[in-house]
Image 1 (cartoon, rainbow over the protein chains, first blue to last red):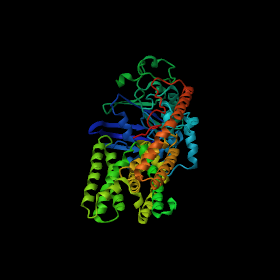
Image 2 (cartoon, each protein chain N blue to C red; image 1 turned 60 degrees about the vertical axis):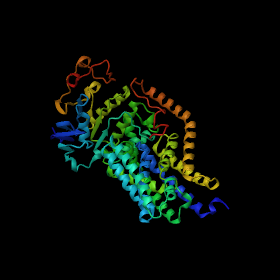
Image 3 (cartoon, rainbow over the protein chains, first blue to last red; image 1 turned 135 degrees about the horizontal axis):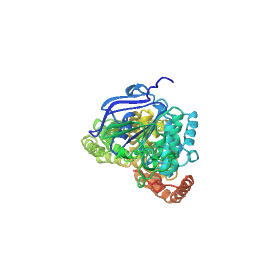
Image 4 (cartoon, rainbow over the protein chains, first blue to last red; image 1 turned 60 degrees about the horizontal axis):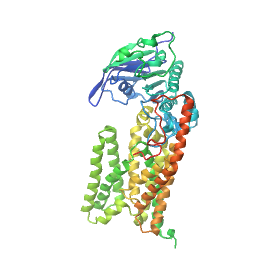
Length: 258
Length: 303
């Protein structure tokens, strides 16, 4: 038994507001190395704001953040964090290739000019991990929504992050992309790296989740094992990954989330 | 006697060449972050700087550079603070720039409507040797920034939230891009005029992105298109009595329409191929958004 490792991200008593409206009201959250933590909650419960606060996109109005044992204000080692924002498309106003978008994930405060030669291998590796290496030269706007999501995951993976943060990566993705997502979670876990992901519901990723944090109205109302599955997901052996369908299937944790 | 034998034509063509390169080099980033209107706004603010130059009897180019840079930084700060409600504040700033410029030129001792006209719509043939020195220095600076920092600027303009989490100095890069755009506007005002500056920043990019799938190719092509239309437009005005700014912009728009007509079948084929590849990868879900060449950013001008 090794000593207990320090959390890769920790928020203590965090409060934040958007447009004057309090969204987080005293949230405690910690993510440890090798852990896959799901952040659950209904729309408007503050789960997206929580991850955005953790990485500095939303200012904290109270409480403290520590990233890799460093107070937020002194944290500079951003290359240890990979971020997959919530996006309906990865495209911007000008065409960009899959490789260009993923390569942009290699820049940080120290590498402003570009990743250099070793970067190419890292990009190839990240693209292979999401099954998009053969599409590297394609324009991002020509891909399906699920494929674009995989490119955004590859962009975050290219820097080989110790903490991968994903905001609603399951929104509107296809079966293949869900498999890629599950594979990514597994790989991070096996390498002792951490994942924090915002989910609307646990769904098919449930067996890969170590811990679930459920938010309700800006407060943590559950922090522990994933909420008990109900319906067909409670059946033994139900651990395969499949596309969820919002209209017909009720998923694990619905009771807590609704 | 050929076109190149006249010193004023040599200077005009050199200025057109430099502006043809610099304007799209900045414009591609503005279009990428869907701020094609930025150049327009900075141009409005620059007019106040021109007026200030007349009033103080100094070079209007330098006062325009300073005023436009200050305006661009202000625009960037407004944009950063409130992403939704910022457009009213920006409008006020833009109108203030035009009104202030007209007022100051009116107050200036040697100010006249003819002077105003030459800055609003360009006055290529009156470019002095001193002007060309300033234009060269500024255009080279713009190219050094936009090409040298292309990876960082691409990352910031592609996805600003993501860029912040990478640890890039996003704010500094945004301000640098704003000032670079302001410098470009002032450099280009002698060639196409403040009211058409934005066209030279945006239309070449709109032409290029119809032919390209990658950002680097779009940037390179848009510089080629920018040089092509500005130099040929300037040369044309030597033979035909036409205003250079309008000629250049109309040439660029004609090219945009022409390439659009030619590129549409090409983009359709690309979209079909992408669809086929997507189908191969697994049956797509109904709500799995298919993005094809018909959407903005893939074949049309994203404003």
